[in-house]
Image (cartoon, rainbow, N blue to C red; front, side, top):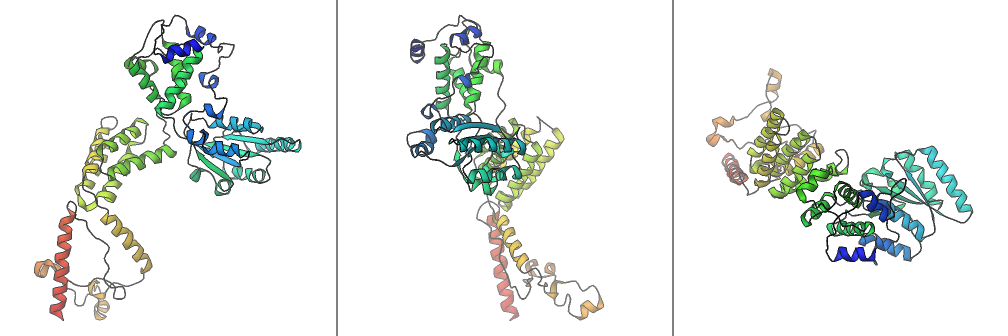
Length: 457
């Protein structure tokens, strides 16, 4: 094994001359039920965990907790394949706690009671229990509440694992009793290290050229388990002596579906990223996130609706055409369908990212809404109300109203605000795009308004 590892590190490519079953047999992996590489390579100490040095390194959060020989309940939040289950097992081993694992997908209140009763029995015998709950966000509120008493009295040390944002998926009572630790997606260096370990374990290099190896690392998408599964697929597919290039690799293993759940956090993260890159005037980044959403199977009309929202929220009257282009793109997609209509979504994404930006209307709308709620009972001045009946005209409805089109500059300068409220200003146009003209126009009208009042006085 030492010699094999040395050959790997020296960069010498070894020609395959054995089938996949023999390869894993030489590594001790062949039996009636072969162990997947991800299981065979599971770290035995925290120091062997890759990609989570902020937690497991010498100064990592978990390392410090272990050095103190005490830690409370924890929630591990991070993408799949980042080591959450492995780290939980290692914590139990390091602290001599009984490791009990359940999945929220398959467990209910009845199963939880059995687990808690067994933990109480072990506690009476002097041994604690680390209860690892995979997919903890799948539990409903009542099930999550069931953990509270056993966490408080020390019956179990809970370690919950979730791929979803705990702030949204777990209740406040549980979060107040647990510390949330963030697991990061594995970077390219961590994935590359896992592949080296796999090669050392099997005694065979991956049958990939340099470019294909880089493609495999990127295909893993930060998921260590996925990287090792893909590596197994490569080994199984290779004929003796065959070395795959990037194109052959993609043809053989196709492509992993992007880690993207349309109903969960990935959905909200990517639409947020798309919105902010459009707002930040970066068309290339905006196209990248758009294509990730399209590739992940996101509802195209959802994307189109959000692009329309970006047009009115972040561009507004700096470029009034933005809304026209955005709604036209939505209609074009409706007409063409997928995939042809997706180009219209790409076009409007670039247009919006390149357009001058203004949230002046957005801010004005929020400010006006607030004042309308606070002073919603104030009547408009009778001057601008229609005198539809004799009685209404008798009490002053419409009296003194001046028709703006009959006035010089088509501007009367009348006061349209409720008397008790007085004039307010909500809309403050920017000096960008078309809004620069509106700034000049509003200033002109304000000057006329002051002049008319002076003349009337």
